[in-house]
Length: 136
Image (tube, rainbow, N blue to C red; front, side):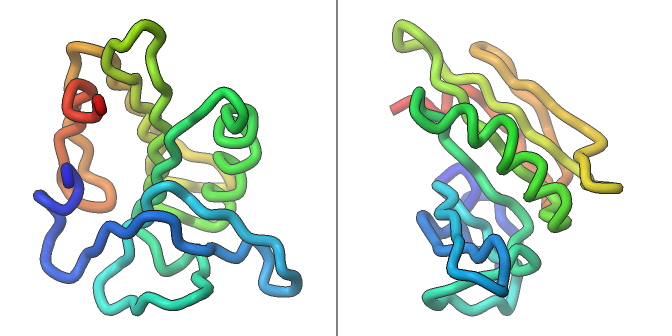
């Protein structure tokens, strides 16, 4: 809801879409939230160029994948923004790592927003990330 409230017309936040890792095989990932660019259609399979933002909500069993492999693949594929939401211990607000502006296979910028903090990012569109708004 945070993303949909500020998204410009045409942008859509959709949970759990199938994103092909490699068009030559059947490997895919299902990011927790996928923000489709304007005029992109839904469907069974998607490619990285259809997204302006992918969000992964880390869990103990997937943190290693979200922190490393997905981070690098999303950057290599040119996804403009990748947010990794890391749950806090003890029920506090999570920490959000917003990876922005991929270049040369890596994200150039990282904005970290912890409990009690907020930050404005401009990619893929202006949005203020507030960790407290992401609690269950």
